[in-house]
Image (tube, rainbow over all chains, first blue to last red; front, side, top):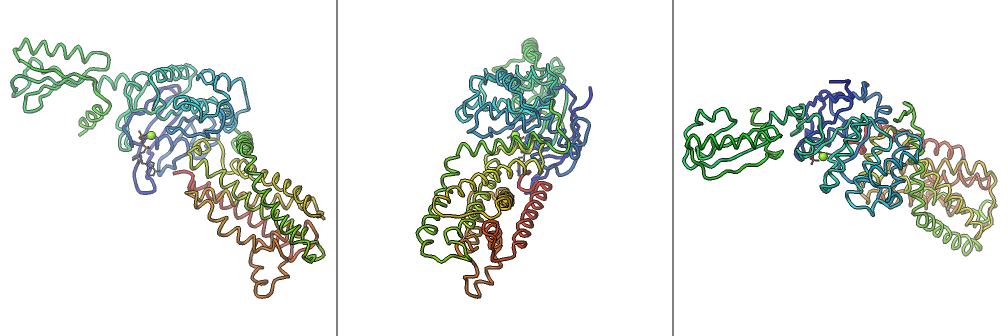
Length: 311
Length: 260
Ligand SMILES: Nc1ncnc2c1ncn2[C@@H]1O[C@H](COP(=O)(O)OP(=O)(O)OP(=O)(O)O)[C@@H](O)[C@H]1O
Ligand SMILES: [Mg+2]
């Protein structure tokens, strides 16, 4: 891994009511990488981002950014970090251009109308530059928040669910945007519920649940390991055990032997090919089946798999 | 890339200051017209109508006598409410995330928010003094000191409002302190009378009211006379300013009501 830009160790957050939102999280982010933090609602993603960006006071643990302890060098570190929050919160009566110009100043940069124009154009907001933010659509509002976060040219950018409530086209647009940031050398940490989003953009993926970072891995390695394709083959007659001929496949029996379950693949189509091979093999073995249900596993399925593996 | 001075982010403070003033300009009509109208009504009723039948107080015409008190009345309530709304609204709408994630600390935040609130108060004070000339004759004995004292009071109560805006977790709380404490104290604080006019025990009791000292401090800069020792007025204002500053730096150090 190249030079770390963010090093989190032993980060724990217990909220005022006693709720433990983060439990001893260790995470190192390399300079220039795109990192996706995946997790269901309430997993602690926003809390983790908040702890780095200053909205949440960590209960214990240390955070180092750009090689310095954040507790001591917060002012210079924050000047290099950008944040797009999950909620659409901004002064709705301000105009787009003024809001973005304000953000740039707030983060200590000299005013630069040309740079602001560049940012607004890249997010297709230039036509709306003098409109009050409340008059924009939800997707545009989100882009304004992105423009505000980019206004001071951060080296480390947090995107908390950047594509929530955004249509398919805009989502693709956002992905392209993040690719561009990657080319500029910006390190991006984003949270999402959508596995395809992590798949599309991330170099590495972290899975968080109940405040614990369950695993962190290269995206490709994780996809291969977790498997994405799930098939349920309903058998004409129950089997007592897996026949040796198909034992090489990642399969198990369910529903008293009346159902053969497959979970495997690596997100590149291997799963579908394997299921096809499996059914041919069943036919060859004379094992009759009366139904096949095949689907790509959802994030939730993967979590279940992940937790089962651990137990 | 941004290279922020590790000690003080002047651009950040300036950005907040300008934004806050811009925000006030959007509602300039409401924020100026209401206090000016109210004060004008006071001048008409107490200055022109009743004042003409009142005796001079300590050699000062009654209409003129109430000018510094009325000015202070407006100054206190406007500074407090401007600053408290200024910081309460971002907390309420969630936009505070940007401040918390920005390279700005307590000093930049205070310069920005409190500076803007105090500036608004000063502009308002100017307009009120101008309005007063239409209704009463007055002159200011120590104009420089008067401006200085007005700035001091505006800053102190903007700081106070800032604390209120952080403390309040709903709109009711935001309004309760000004209505329950500030307004009664200002009305009983010798705006419309000299405390020497009061019978005992009210007179001694009035001396416990800190607003009495503020009103008299400002009145001294206008007419060179005061019911109380003006050094106490000055000391009290400075002390209040200091306490508010200390409370705010404590709030920022602990993140109370700002960070979760
Ligand atoms: N201010 C708070 N006080 C108490 N508990 C909180 C607070 N903020 C968050 N929590 C709790 O901490 C847990 C983690 O919340 P967090 O917002 O970090 O989740 P998340 O992973 O971002 O979820 P989502 O995907 O829904 O955005 C949740 O159970 C939430 O209820
Ligand atoms: Mg969240």
